[in-house]
Amino acid sequence: MHRVFAVLVCPAPLFLWVTLAAGEPVQFDCTPANCPTLVIEGDAISRLPNGQPAGFRGFADPCVRKDPENHALWMVYSWPHVEYVGGGSRDFVVGVETHLASSADGGVTWRRTGVLWPKTPARYGDVRTRIPVDGFVSHEVPNIAPILLDGTPAWVGVRLDYFLGRSGNYQARNPRSFCLRLMTATSPAALTNATPVTFGIAENAPECRVDVNLHALSDDFPLRFIPNEPAVLFKDGRLYLAFVVMAFSGQKPDFPQSFIAVLSTVPRGGVRSWTWRYHGKLAGHGEASALGGESLTQIELALGQDGRLLALLTPEAWDVRLAQENSRDPFFGIVHRGVAIVEVASLDSPALGRRPDGRLAERAILAASQDGERGPGAAAYDPASATGVVFTRRDIVPGKSLSWSLHPTRVHP
Image (cartoon, rainbow, N blue to C red):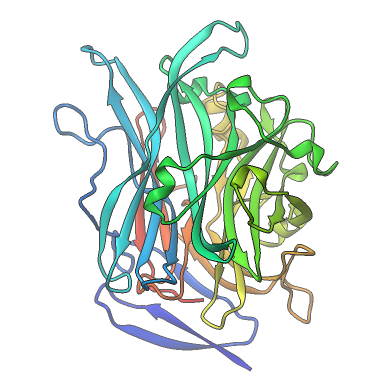
């Protein structure tokens, strides 16, 4: 049996159909020559008052979905930016908000629809001094999906929220403020004003107002962890929520104890009344090792061209040298090793698909060899989009800048 993939081999919209032997994943290296930047009309990167690109900028964390009602395509994505809050050159804050774009021509062109979730002013107690600190709650790694709510078409959205103090910015993140927020509305744009339900743990900062305590659902969840990188999918009347459980040992991520969890619910009535069921671990350290990492992050769920359920995953690892270069930030030592697209055997009894020889059923492996040692970002896919897999490249200059960009690969797993 052979599987067919569509792969772009030049910047023009021409496709080469490549027949691969069963079990052989397509390999794609996203470079400027074959992976142009995705243009979103009406949107732009963050810039300084003098017009120069800001040190924290770009588009990241995409999610692409086809609208079952009108066949339009929707894309949500993170917009990292710098905002000046005073008159001095150092009077600025960094933050992340969620933008929404749409395509009426099958993903050939995209136009910004608006700001879906702007960062929100907040005042959190400092984790050490408990003195209130002014700042913002950032909203990133968004995900959306069409659902049926009480038999009526609707949309669900989910995001990661966390607090950034105005002083210290990313190095002053409050780890107790990390939580997932999920909401539903009649359209993707209407999610902006929807009332959310919040997933977290009892040890979250009081400002999180956790509604679903994950520790109460299962003993699988470690004592100290951050819920991260959520993904949603509606299938056979159930809404599935997968997310990364990022465990910690002290200030360092504990990759062997980290995993991807799967919950589900039957959407009925108000979102805050939904009953959630824990299904188990979709993937953990073992699957990460098989994919070239120590843990897995940036989960996305999508259907392949043949209708099979796929997981888009980023293998990550810990680099001691990079961590030592910036010991104040526990995330600085994390490196990404491309994106693996793997078949999903089941979400009810969570497991990735495997070949008859026991290997993971990989459909595609995406890399960005020119992105440096920290590696690329997340990926998204909808089989109806001409973009194929949308890939995130990262350009990180330590101590100077962090930028992200989205790229259509034309790879259709």
